[in-house]
Length: 177
Image 1 (tube, rainbow, N blue to C red):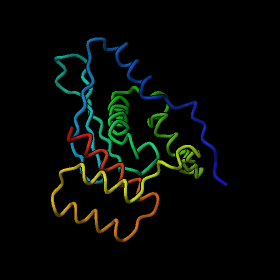
Image 2 (cartoon, rainbow, N blue to C red):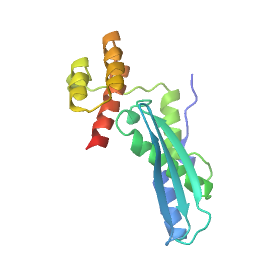
Image 3 (cartoon, rainbow, N blue to C red):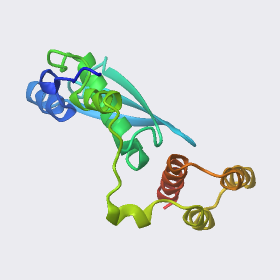
Image 4 (cartoon, rainbow, N blue to C red):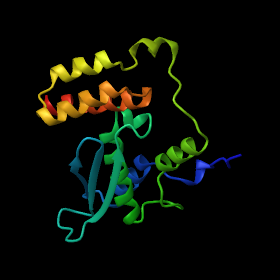
C-alpha cells in the first residue's frame, strides 16, 4: 500500500511566479529551449531581479516525450514550466518545500499507479499504424529516420509505444509549421 501525498504544503509554479513579480516588479523570467530530439526536451530558465541583474538565477528541467499522459502531448510546455519552477525555487520562491505542487502531483499519480483512462468516446482516436503512416507522409524526414520509424511499425508497437510515437511525430509536424 502506498502512502498518499499531502499536496497542501507544495506551491504551484503559478504562485511562485506571482510572488516573484510582487517582490521584483521589474524582474523577468526567460526560458531557453536547450535541446529537443526524438524523445527528450531540455529547458533552461533564467530569473532576473531587474534588467541590470548581473547574476540571474537558473533552473533546468528535462522531460521524456510520452513519459506521462501530459507528456504525450504537452511535453515542451510541461518542461518549460518545470524549469521556471526550479529557477524560482533557487531564488527562494519555493514556499516550505522545494518541489512544485505539479511535480509532487506527478509523483503521487505515478506511485499510486493512476493510469490515464481513455473514455469510450476517445477509443476510436487511439493511434494506429495507419495514422502514424499518414503522419509520416506529411513530414519531411531523413531517409534513416523514416527507416527507423518504419522498422518500429513493422516490429509491432504496444499501445503506449504507438501513442509515444504519434506524439513525437505530431511534435515534429508542429515544429515544421
